[in-house]
Amino acid sequence: MKFFPEKCKIEDQRMKSFIDPEELWDYINNTQATKERVREIIAKALNKERLTLAETAVLINASDPELIEEIKQGARTLKEKVYGNRIVLFAPLYIGNKCTNNCKYCGFRVSNKDAIRQTLDDQQIVKEVEALEDNGQKRLILVYGEHPDYSPEYIAHTVKTVYGVRKGNGEIRRVNINAAPLDIDGFRIVKESGIGTYQVFQETYHPEAYAKYHLGGKKKDFDWRLTSLDRAQEAGVDDVGIGALFGLYDWRYEVLALVRHTNHFEACYNVGPHTISFPRIQSASDIDVDPKYLVSDEDFVKLVAILRLAVPYTGMILTARESVQVRREVLQFGVSQIDGGTKLELGSYSDTKNEEQNLNREQFVINDNRSLAEIIDELIDTEYLPSFCTACYRLGRTGEHFMEFSVPGFIKRYCTPNAILTLAEYLVDYASEDTAKKAWIVINKNIENMEDEKIRNSIKEKVEKIKSGTRDLYY
Ligand code: SAM
Ligand code: SF4
Image 1 (cartoon, rainbow, N blue to C red):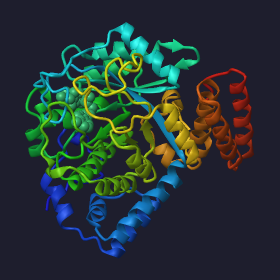
Image 2 (image 1 turned 90 degrees about the horizontal axis):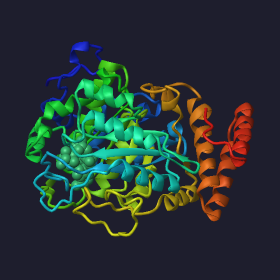
Image 3 (image 1 turned 180 degrees about the horizontal axis):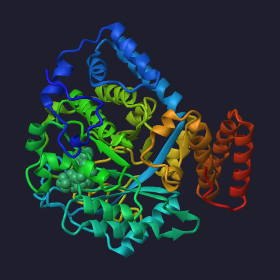
Image 4 (image 1 turned 120 degrees about the horizontal axis):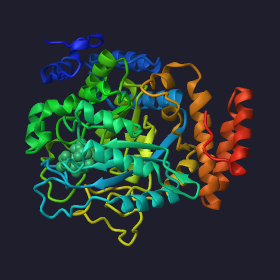
């Protein structure tokens, strides 16, 4: 059995492949999920210790329904312990769907002649962002195909355009990116525009499966993509998001590979990924996906719970690809960010004529079509605390999200108060009377639950300021 060192601050591992399929399969094939071992590992995770690959493999191998229930319960407890009841909200904004790659699972693939290609111009971007601001959004992720038109300079330009849009009390305070891998200079250029997270999903960490699904264009190169976020780190983008597209290869392998990727960052840069995404393949225009590895709802819930336990400090993103029911369920097991009011068709936030999805204009089907207002209303009903917080990144508290996890009291001091303040702004500026009424009760309850009197009083003071017109208050 070949092992990569899991924690080895060796600089020469930077920008090198860290994936050895044989190693990952060895872990999966040679660990046993006995009751004692599974319970020991859940207890370790609840003690907020990072799990090793071998320990993660034990959880992956658990098949006894009683143990799976304990894994889910463990993830739920850990989420409550580490993150509390906050859920951060965002929306995707597709900027352009031209693409030179040929990913067999994507409606934007170059070989899809039915795809209607479009790139938003500045005016259209402004209109879209105004519409998003009118809904109360504060955090966006901009999405692009891979195309010579979408150069680092162009991406930076679109980011600045988005930040420049102000409508009423609306503004976008954090712009994240999901785009093709760049070289180091490219990442530098994009960083200077003031981005939050740069996401690149590996899609599958299995080189053979990767080759089967990526037929053309620059994305064919597995290693160029695998090392992309190393180049981001070298360029000073220390806030990166990783992900796997579940359904291309065995989910057990992909979960372990995501943990391996996390170990690589910790070893080389002393910081883990800011977020992990776990999209499941959805149907789309002209795609060609082998159903063999599609992930069932049951396995999906299990894999999210395992990821939560294995990498407790990392944000976990669940998107509107998933149905309302699945989102409701999975939310409990460790998700910290969801999108709301999502639309994928270019230009469709401002042009609301077509309610139905037109798959020749969109990347894939979404299964949660609810508006941001509806999602917030449901979160409130279930006593979650919707948050639009952007404070850490704006105060330079980036790349150190270990803090949330390891600095005692961090969440009580910063995250919960900021969630309350951003929700208060939303209630005053955008919410219906009915939602606002319920949400103020949740806010007051959360304030009263804070142990520290000084913090309690300070939040109350700031909430009063928001009610009388001050905006953008944060800790
Ligand atoms: N072109 C950029 C790239 O490839 O990195 C941006 C990617 S794409 C616009 C965002 C992500 O959507 C992809 O990385 C992939 O994981 C996911 N995706 C693509 N096709 C999908 C499908 N049919 N169902 C669900 N997710 C899909
Ligand atoms: Fe292009 Fe990205 Fe779609 Fe692949 S996943 S075809 S690179 S937009």
